[in-house]
Length: 213
Length: 213
Length: 213
Image: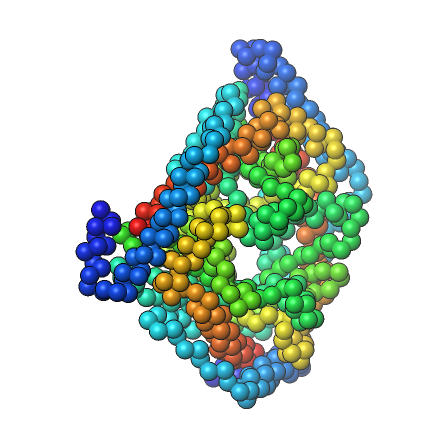
């Protein structure tokens, strides 16, 4: 439909618009060619969602959530795809391994009207604990609006984990492990991020081709 | 008027306030001296706006927009002056060329109720394409409020350009070039940023002198 | 009370929940042990608030303000504890001194319906001036909401201080010194940040123990 509309418009603006159409077609063509290539490659299957968790992702969004109930606690994992820093992407492309991929995510554990907010990262096959904040209100903790994020930033974010005693860090890790939040879950977060990114990338190719055709 | 008010206030608080006045004057004096110096230097003329584009900038703001119509598309360039990182500014002052100036800007191309959102940078005389997102709603794409920006960050931002096939990147560059978004336009963005910064700097000197007098 | 509720719940989910309880206790135990240790260490006394200033800090928040009146000006210092970058914290732990601690803070000086907004940092025993913006509206300058911050970022932020003439920078420093905003005040900001972080850390240990027990 879209390209019909364009064709009706073209004759009135003649040679310039014709050149434009060729270029427009070029972007559309390349996007569709790339889409075809992607679709011909062997598909990585959708990673299996770990038992007990419910996953939510809206098409077009760069985030997904995992949630489950654990006794009287509700757990929610929130993962936002990272936009690659152009310089780091460039270095990685040139084989610089020091700029390893990081998959940061958040876990909210809510119980009795309070929330623990864990900052976690999957890196180099392992789950690393970056931080743990305590919020006296689950509504405050789960507010992902800009104002909500600003409000949370003004609250105490918890200690720097790299400076904590090992015993305390280990007990936090044990707390998480017991709830199924461990290297396996964070490996899932990473592989689901890859898989989701691929879906979003293919959809992006379709949208760009459609826009430019 | 302002300084009249201050003078009436001074006698009541005597010697301390007198000392204060001298210092206040010192900042005002230096700001005015600097303003005079700036104004005596040969003026860089206002860069010519590229044909077909309309530029908007409100005094006091650190951003400007360029817009034009291209067939049935509306194009809007949005450029926000960068606040120099103190460390990078220091290094640049000491002649470290590795910290080259970057002029990031955004281009929104809207057509048929959809928007392509290009992340571009002028660096080292060239326009670099950093990213391209697709939004199904122009209202969402152009919402520069904090909530709007947070909403956009939760959407898919498009692939990492450094990882794309050259042919696809080239066709994006051709798409932009055809719309007059090329090295020349990004060089204009950089030179206008310089010029605008100079105007804002002189106005800042006036405001600071006025405040401190 | 909390643990009573949990005990009533446990029997229904038997052995798994029992194991869970042991782990939960481990985090609670470690948090309480750490709290005890912290409380047995010699206490750093609360740093004395510099004469003339009023300090405000709400428990649970990671920011504090200092305010005072100076002639017809109102001064407000705003300091937000920084969340340590995990990599920098790691390096610091390993004795890398190059990643010195920074304590950035803001000073708003309001007079006659205008505001100067100073960006300051305490680093290596000294107060460094990073920036100075002028706002024609105190309401805009002091708006710390996400929308308010976004609005301020779109305004001119003032020149890069590292590029200014020394005389102008010196006169800004003199302006600040005269108002008691100097190395001593910024040293207070740093030491109060430490002290406050310790209070918040101990409170965090209590909250985490309470949550996990």
